[in-house]
Structures are given as structure tokens and as C-alpha cells.
Length: 104
Ligand SMILES: [Zn+2]
Ligand SMILES: [Zn+2]
Image (cartoon, rainbow, N blue to C red):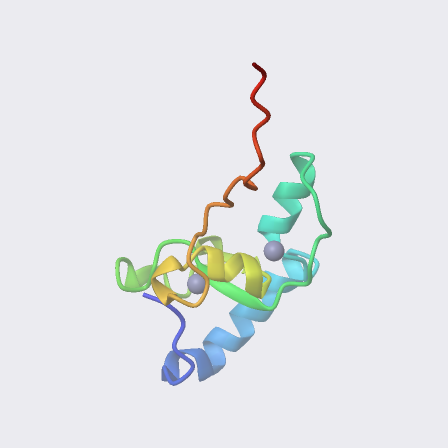
């Protein structure tokens, strides 16, 4: 289940307050970017733009307002966590085709 803008849940006061608290706790930075950086990864840590449910609301609606079930993410990392969205399918980078030198 992904974040539907039309879902009244995402406009509820309780959610907006909680989502902001989550972002504040994460210094308004994307957690996935931070982890990638910590692991010695490339790129910069982007700002958190979306607050994501780790366990989707469709599975655990009782955790929809549990701050521990939330994760601050940038849009790019968020899309990665929602391959079902279709907008950004988890594309495995293809190795660049290289002309093979065949030695005879
Ligand atoms: Zn990110
Ligand atoms: Zn999400």
C-alpha cells in the first residue's frame, strides 16, 4: 500500500504532527541516504520529504500512528521502497556493454 495523497489519513492532524516529529527526530534527513552514507556509499544525504510506514498500514493499521513504525525518507529512497508504485521500478543497473577483445 502506498501513500495516496487523497487518503484523508495523510491530512489528519494526528498524522501531520507525528510525521513532523519523526522528521525532526531524524534531523529532517533521509534515513536510507544516511545508512547508505554510513556504509561508505556514494552520493549525498538528501532531505527527508516523505514519512514512510515501515510496516504498511494495510498490514498493521494499528501501527499507523506509531512513531517507531515510521521512517523519514527522501522521494527517491521512498520510491525505491514502493516498487509497486510503478513510477520507479527497482531497476538493476545493467553492466555497460563493452566490446570484448578476443585475442587469437
Ligand atoms: Zn534518501
Ligand atoms: Zn511509503
